[in-house]
Image (cartoon, rainbow, N blue to C red; front, side, top):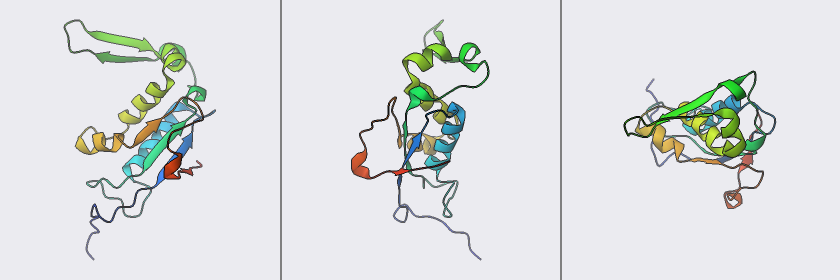
Length: 142
């Protein structure tokens, strides 16, 4: 029996909405990464980009369990000498909860060209309204 190799012309992409209200930030991000990679499809192949589009709404209402809100920090480097920056998740969730969610999802995607391409299909919104109603997205329950 031969191995199935998906072609880019055969891939059908759906649109899904994930509601983060009252759910853990990491669990929503893990489910979004799962959908973006296409691992829920029977035609999944790790070398092919066969994932779907994902819209995450209500990022302001996502929760962090334990002491993560006060202890966890996000660090990045600007590229300049002495350019190491960091921000606590308490401030990040209060001001830029959509950025916190996209950082979490991007950390769960592969660090290569395939992962960067999959990350372009992620849309993250702070509130319940989104701009993608024309695509007729389905609500994904998990």
